[in-house]
Length: 282
Image (cartoon, rainbow, N blue to C red; front, side, top):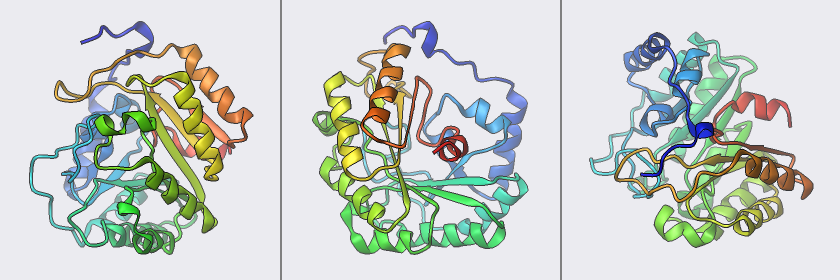
């Protein structure tokens, strides 16, 4: 394994707020991508406190090479209480911006779209003035599933491209780059604010990253996040390169130059990291 450079090291922070947040989540049988994806920002975010809620269980039906979410077990049954439990927890935590994501559920007819819609509505019915951001899978490009989510009126629709097209066979073997761009374009056509994110350090070139940003601009994407891929487990893809901080600044500058409203780029940037600040600055 490559040795971490100084700029790619982050301390977890005090254990107490992490345990307290996990206790809150476990009381209502809730999952977070913060835990399942082994996010390096978990100590910081759980201390705020804030979290990215992950619906539809913690077992994914796809085998993406970068992700540590469980892919071996059988997917969980859809929990009918999950939407209300997320809404109640978000209210207890005093959240003003809630991010809801999910594992990919290709085993479900609608890919889990209805659960997204129910969760959006539950949060908005429970918390006045709340902003709800969803980070969805591609629903295999199904327009009906996408419209189910959009009709629930999320404030921000996020779907991550994750990497450059040439790396999809290793990084997202069951996904399609053009299909994902189409999801973003179709969401934008509904009038919602759209967002996407990619990881770097997987072997992509600068020119490929710039092309992805250009494609996202063409899709109408309003906000883009770019962060360093950090290997979550020994079974995950290896890091090919630790990207220098200046390169992240260059990507951010380029994205803004071509007209993307906001580009948030840095080593520890993740799709949902400081989501409320990113949207507030757009």
